[in-house]
Every structure is written in structure tokens, then in C-alpha cells.
Image (cartoon, rainbow, N blue to C red; front, side, top):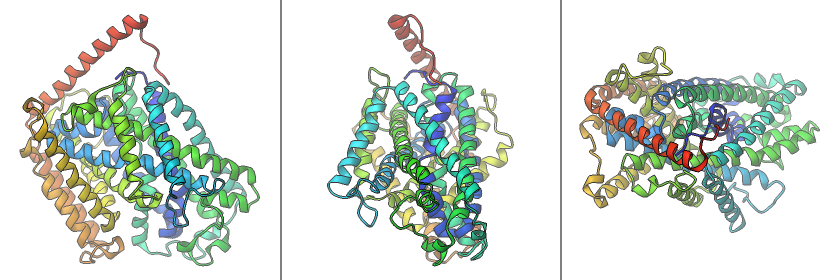
Length: 544
């Protein structure tokens, strides 16, 4: 891979992933769950994800590699933990593209009828055929190389920032229904709903900051740019989403709330903001919103096809999956990984043929991977304390375990219906690892480092049990009532965190894994420099 993406391109990779279908649908779905108190949910979600983003900022600056979400736990806990983290993240990432395709086609159905059924699912054959065409287009742009991907994404992100900001300003200035916040009570569904709303689209909306990490192997000056891109993109996303949440809650016509917040609907339009704009006589804004309803999801889907391929590239580098995923094309992109992500993403359209059905799985799988990064940070602070950290997280001893706790709370709040499916997919991942080891040559079988990863068993089993026994508000059996359930998750998380840190790899073993990374990087930089000198005499300037 080639380091061709500068700070702006890297930050826009994250911003382009954060601002997707979540901004178009998140405020509506969250408000149906929590009413106007969904604004609090957006604030809680921002704080939670920002905590986790800060952890990624330190790790990404230390190790600018492709598929970092798999490789950081690998350095701290060995191969089994690294594979687990990579598989969790891959499950979330590879399903984002089909979810964004479904969102784009659902909006497009307002003027190209026959794409979506009345229950929100894709039609046969037209809906599925167009979804497949979009998936192929995403892959085609990715295959052209990271410069094409970054350039395409750059112009898309300018649009994706401008339209939400314009929407917030117009609705806040022209709509004056601030009584909506109190007419039925600020928290009409109760406190549990505030937390349940996090998994209804809020956390999903904030996901994507880690794209700067996953594209780290292709960033110019990555040790500086990755932390700046992670933190900067997250702050941009938080400001936009909080503004949208307030604008949505205060611009809904009071008549639309006659049956309560849970029954909000907009006749004849799937897009809530476009429906509000039309009702206000702002046809020009509605047109822009319907155009954005295709552009924003498509841009995010485009990026996730690329980052999914880079994750499989990283897992192949660590010998978790077949070496075919490690091969790059003449344009220095992981060819097989891109095609595989496209095919797998399309297959996910079959059992999850609507946007809503995919969101819970994406959120839980991605956040489960997020949760392993604070463990890696805590371990690496002890294993390689003197390693250069371009960004050093303040109060890491407090923030790191706190980030692990909140990640587990998000998984729990996703509910039992989602969590049992997620854990089933986790089991499938370990079967994949076993099969790869079975059919690989002995020299291509990495040590599993089982002793350093024993904590994975009680961790995954415990989270499954807590979700099953948890509050009925989140689909559990009700043996852990609301309030007590969160306390149990927190205590359990602190215990697993302490166990993982205690079982971490010996300092020498962690250092040896990191040394392998350094040797890889030096070799590849020398090869790429030689290629550039032979092809053009000098390296091209970075994009962005």
C-alpha cells in the first residue's frame, strides 16, 4: 500500500463515514423511542463514543497500519484476541455498505417507485438488482486506488456537511415549535427509553471515526495525522448531530404528535426532514434533502467497502485468514478483499432486507470491537511504556477502563434480540479461524497465545448471560431490573478489564510483535520508494 492520503483526506474518510444515513433517519427513530429526551440520548452517545475515539487516537498514532482494530489487541494479547477484535469489527463494517444501499434506495423510492415494499424491504427483482449495481459501483471506485477513493470521498463530504448544516439553520430559524419539548413531558417514555434510544440509530450515527485508523497504512505522516483525523472528525460529527436532534424535535408540526412521539409519521415521505420542509413550503430544501438521501448513504457505503477490505488485509497479515486477502493489485489496493466485501455485503441483503434490521447488528458488532481497544491501550501502556506516542491520552488509567464499560453498556442496551445473533456470528468467526489453521501450512499458523486471551471466554459468555437475564426494557428475562442491570455490566466490565491486563502478553512478547510491524513497514517503504523512483523519479504529493 502507498502513503498517499494527507490530513484532510484522512479526516474526511472518517467524517464521510460518520455522516451517512444516520443523520437522515437517526433523529426520527430515536425520537420514537425516547421522545424529546432523545436529545439527552444524543449527548450521552456523543460522550460515550468520544471516550472510545480518544483511545483509538493514541493507538492509531502509535501504529499506523491497515486493519488496526485487529492488530492493536494482537500486540497486547496475541493472535486469538487480535482475531476476535478484527472479526467483531469486520462483521460491523461489511454490513454497513448494504445498510447504506438500503437507505439510499428507500429514499429514492419516493420518486423511482417499485424499489421498496410497504414494510421497508427491498423488492424483487428491481430493488435487489439496483442494490447489487450500487455495491459493484462502490467496489469499482475502491479498485481504482486510494487516491480515487479519497478524491471521490472529498467532494462527497463537502456536500454531506453542507446539507445537514443548512437544514439545522433553516429549521431552527423558520420553525418555532419549542413547545414540543414539554407538551407531552420531556421524558414521556421514561428513563430506560433514553438509553434504549442509543441503539435505535444514535450510536450507529456516530460510528465511523475509526476509518482514519483503518486507512492508516495509506496516510502521509500518519503518526501526526491519524490522531488529528480521529478527534477532529468526531467533534464535527457531534456538533452536526446535536444540532439536527434539536432542530428535528422543535420543527415537527404539533399535529404530527397527536398520537404521541412513538407514533410520529410523515405521510407520503420516508424522509422526516424532507417531509417537514415540504410542510413548511420549502420545496427547494426538500429537493436538496432527497438528493442528499442518496449521496450521503452512498458515500458512506463506498468507504466501508474499502475499510472492510483493509481489515481483512490486516487479518491476513496476522495470518488469521487466507493469504489471498493480503494480495494487492497494481494500484496498491487489496483486490481480493474488496471483491469479497462486495459479495458478502450483497449476501447480507437477503436475511436483512431493510435498513432497520441491520442497524442493531452493525452497532453491537462494531462497538464490541471498540471495547477491546481500551484493553489494548491499558496493556500496552504497561508493556511498552517508552514507545513513542504522538498523541498521549490524558488520564488513560481512568478513561481506558471507563471506555470499556460504556462499550459493553452499548452492547447490552442493543437488546437480547440483537445480542444472541451477534454472539452466534462470533462463534462462526472462531470456526473460520479454526478452519484456516487446519488447512494452512504449519509455518503460516500463528501461535494463538491462549494464556493471554483466556479472558475472552468469561467476557463473551458473561455479556451473553447478562443480556439474557437483563431488564425487559432491553429484551431480557427481567431478572436484572433497570438500574441494577447497568451496575452489573459496570462491575463485570471492571473485573474483565483487570483480568485482561493481568493476563496480557509478557513485555518481551509484545515488543517482538511490534518489532515485526516495524520490519514490515521499513521493507515496504523501501520497495515503494524504489517503485516510485523507477516509475516517475519522485513521489507524488499526498491528497488532501
